[in-house]
Image (cartoon, rainbow, N blue to C red; front, side):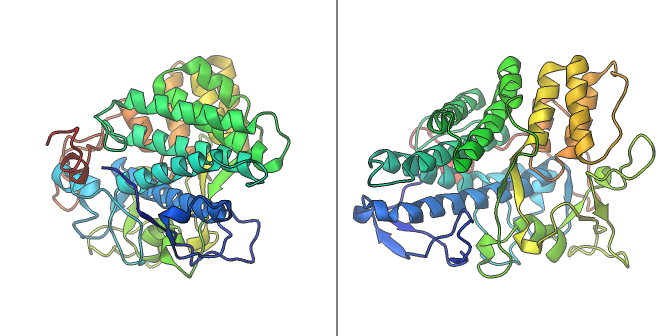
Length: 421
């Protein structure tokens, strides 16, 4: 399926033109004929549209992956939502996802929004390359940005999909997708270079975290450790959302877990404690008072408290120092790995682990499960470490399927001439 458009529709109605420090600060140009896109004056709109699409794809992945991995139970009964919990194969193939336009929508899926974001970001980079620095003063930053964000689309599609296809091409493996991700992150690092410009420094760190994550996925532990070690303390890159205005600009995780009771935190993430018996501050979960069921009138509601500070405008992390340190811990192991884990624990004022456990892999899996809760990471970890998925029947009597990774959706297999189905 080729995600190309004869005209560009950039949905920017919710952008606050007065907030000039925001990624998506640009006036809404409405529809732009394709033949006029060679004008460098339109690049801010193209940039904003690509980032908007990425942030939609990012939240869709976080919500969907959180459900597939058992971080969340579906607490509504709609057919476009609850099969993602019990991993209904036919239903998942029929729902490639999209971007929410109302708060009451329950659909999941990440394939379409991430593919659209990938195409727009790569198109953005190509268009920027066609201009000179005089025509487009921020050209290098836009190229670094487009490459870094495109790299993340490949990472998520590589982690979540069983196999992939790009722009109507043949089926490719997850390993091939990770190679494409590495190419994009390396390109971003090349554009950022050794610049001390704040925007380029931040994009360079984003690319280091992204490439470290991809290298971990690909089994390149030495490369993952090298990149992760370069990320400075305190670094975080977020996907930005805005409360009110256009729903497409709101944090959908907040809307589904807090605003609408569509998703409930699963039992494995409720009441987690530290070694000393104190509540684990990394997995903040509460039961509403008085207790209630979700919209399905069956599932007890438990709500995440990690991403609620600005309601629907709460940002979601894309790349961070904490994640980089956990990658470093896994890639190095031993006392060096334990030291990296303890640096992450210190961020939440959690006591250090003083003794290196015999089963270090189990420790890193658990530390990642807690630190990266609700960040779209657990699903990839389950596939990477071969952690068993839920089986049997759930509280609603629905039977879990054997599906683990997500198959190509029907819209792709039926329309891509290279797939023959």
